[in-house]
Image 1 (spheres, rainbow, N blue to C red):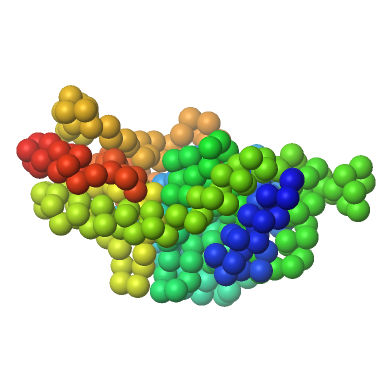
Image 2 (cartoon, rainbow, N blue to C red; image 1 turned 120 degrees about the vertical axis):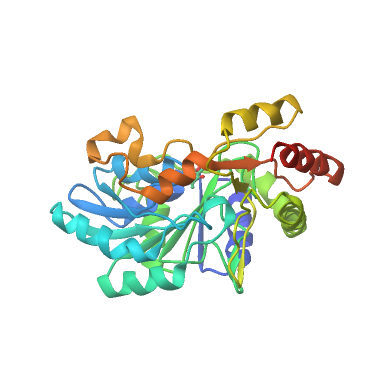
Length: 341
Ligand SMILES: Cc1ncc(COP(=O)(O)O)c(C=O)c1O
């Protein structure tokens, strides 16, 4: 909690355009701390997407609350608000109190907040934006990290704005939640660290990581432009047999990942092996949707429950994406992919 922490928090809250930024030790803690502050626990339901990194759901489970899933759109891979009513009723039928929705800005693209907010307002639910991959994305002029009641992001090195280890940040305009979250970050501290007003965690960000981020935020907008250019080039040149990611009108992705959907009949493993033989790494995010993960069996979901998520997880493939991918390498990737089609 050295002086770099205050400096970073001020820079980040200005960048995102929210009142409070609370840095913390990881993107996972940036979701856990808000849920603790909201008082989420046993008997509560939190609605989220099954097509996400496990951390989104783990924080719900670890607090003893129950994750309730809602399927995704097949072109943006984000939660489809049309399924929220069913998820809400599913929670009620399990005798749970639906309290929060966690939309995920998957691969850098913000979720469809206008419709999610409409539903949350109608049902009196809080929104916790999982912007772990979304930092730098926006809808119109509104940046990821500013949607919902609270947002959490990650600075893990693979993220659009990465530090040199683990790191994260929480954003909110809510003064009361901000005060609680600051306290929870440091063991529930009160007036000083040996007075503990509530149960908290060790969720501090290291000053050395803040120092890295203070420098990297200066070049971040330039890096976003580079990612955008690389994504456009992929979309223009990849064979149409592969479905490129859809970025809806007025939406901007931070391109944490560039993910294509391969045809039904194509053998993904063979494609990955062929790319690998050409020296091209690729990755499947996420091959097992959360509702089908072994560790999450107790929530009672099975194959067929979220058909779009399951279909996408069988056919998705993420290609190399980082701001300094040069055109020669990108041409090599595109021609290896297209020759497979
Ligand atoms: C969607 C999502 N949520 C949460 C996290 C957790 O972030 P971290 O790895 O910094 O704990 C990640 C990062 O991997 C993520 O991709």
